[in-house]
Amino acid sequence: MLTENAIIEKLKTIYDPEIPVNIYDLGLIYQVQVIGGQVYLLMTLTTATCPAAAFLPEEVRQTLEELQDVAAVHLDVVYEPAWTQDRMSAEAKKILGFG
Image (cartoon, rainbow, N blue to C red):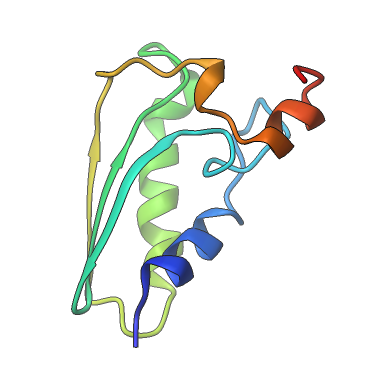
């Protein structure tokens, strides 16, 4: 059975190309919802002009589609609320020297 925790663990394998932290701990994932085999995500990027905007959302989609029982990934990139360093996990802040 597909779970939110399985999605989160898979998201933690995806890294921002410019920052050595996975996108989940970086705080780029705002919402994860699983309904049956459907995965719904709200994510953001560090800035609206982030160079990764051209490929990171598609990488997320493709990576999650590798999971057994994922029928579809519905991903929306949003910029409100804006990403800030406060969204990072304690581990991410430690890796980046913020805390």
